[in-house]
Length: 359
Image 1 (cartoon, rainbow, N blue to C red):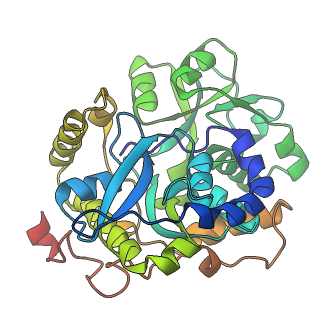
Image 2: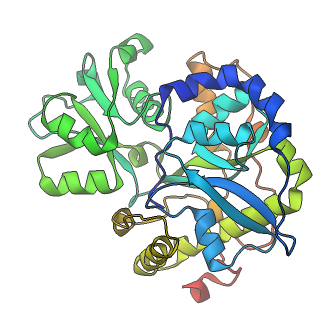
C-alpha cells in the first residue's frame, strides 16, 4: 500500500468536465451486477502493480462477507480510476480528494465512502532541492521549476498551498513553473539541473536521501499533519442499488486499514509480500519493502470533513468552483464505516476488540 500513482495525466483532470455528462449517460448501461454461485456481489476494480490495495488486503484477511473482488487490470492514474468508476467501467475507484471534488462539481454522481491514502510522520511526500541550491524560501521559487508526477492533482495543490501560506500572491504563484516528471526520473532531473525542486515520496525519497546531497524545503505532512488525501468512490446509483454490497466492502476495507494501523510494520510487510507473491501477476515486491505506515489519518479510513472542505475551499478560492456549489456532505459518507457508525469504537482494533488485544 505504497500509495497508488494517483493523477498521472493533466488530460484526465481536464476531461472531467467534458466527460461528466457521458458518465451520467453511460453509468446505467454498465450497472449489471454479477453474483458468484454463493450469492456474493462481484466488484470490478483496477489495482496497482507491485502494491496491495486495502480492499485486496481485506479480501486476503477474510473481512468480506457479501462481496468478491474482480481485478480487471492495473491503473497508474487516480483521475482515470474515478472516471472509470463514474462511467461504470469499474465499480469503485480512488483518487486525490481534489480530483474527486472536481469530478463531482462537473456533475458526476459519485460518493466517497472511505479514505485510502495520505501522509503522516512516516509516510509523506517531500519537496527537495540540492544542498547547494540558493533556494531557501518560497519566494526564491519564483521563476524556478518544480518537478512532480502530474499537474492538477495532489502535488500541484500542495505546492500551491505552501506558496500561498508563505505569502506569495496569486500572480507570483503563477510564476513558479510546475513540470511533469515521472517519479522514477525526478531525482536524476534534479541532480542534472533540469528542475530546481523535486517531489519525492516512498522509495524514490528514501533512495534519493540515502545518496545524499539533498535538502528538504517542506513536506505535505508539515502543511497538514496527519491527513488523508484520497478516497475510494462508488457511483451513487450503484450505492442505491447495491447498498448491502457497498456496506460490506467498506466495513471490510476499513478493518483492513485498521489492521495495518494496529499491527507491527514487519507483520504488515510480510502479509503484503505474501499477497503479491501468491496472486500470480509477475510483480516485484521491492516497493513493499519500503512500506512504513498506512498513511491514513482516520481510524479505519474514516473521512473527516476537513479532508474534503480543504479542497472545496482551495478550488473556490482559485475560481475553479462556484462558491457554495458543494459542501463536504455532498461528496462523502461515513455511513458504512464501522469506526464511524457506532459498530466499533474508533479506538478498537480490526475486529472491534480493545486495541491492546489487537496488537
